Amino acid sequence: MELNVKERIILGSILPQRGNFATYRMVQDLLMKFGLKAEEIKEIELQELEGGNLHWNKDIIKDFEFKDAEVDLIKKHLKELDDKESLNYADHISLYEKFVKE
Image (cartoon, rainbow, N blue to C red; front, side, top):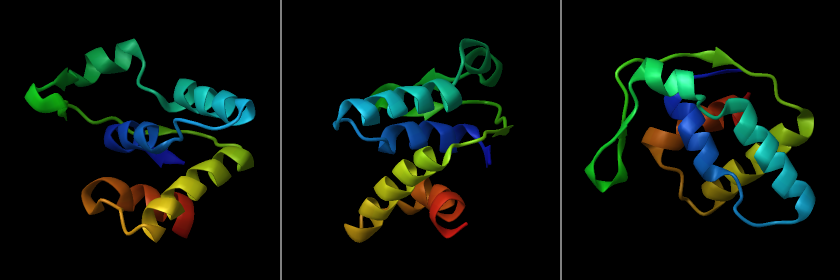
């Protein structure tokens, strides 16, 4: 599945912060998989602005393979946002379409 920089950052922010040990390991594996690497941060010129907003000058798209259990975890949390009517259209919709709507 192809993800751009914004999708990778947002995806990291929707993963669960609490759970059992198995979920913790899966979240850690996911973050290692799609998290921005040091060379990518330099390449895109990522900067944190006042207020904690992020800005980058170049977008890169990378293809990632996800295990079924990883996709299920991501879907679960995107569906929870949807059920709570908490999807942020600018941030979550492209991920929702990729992982939930397929």
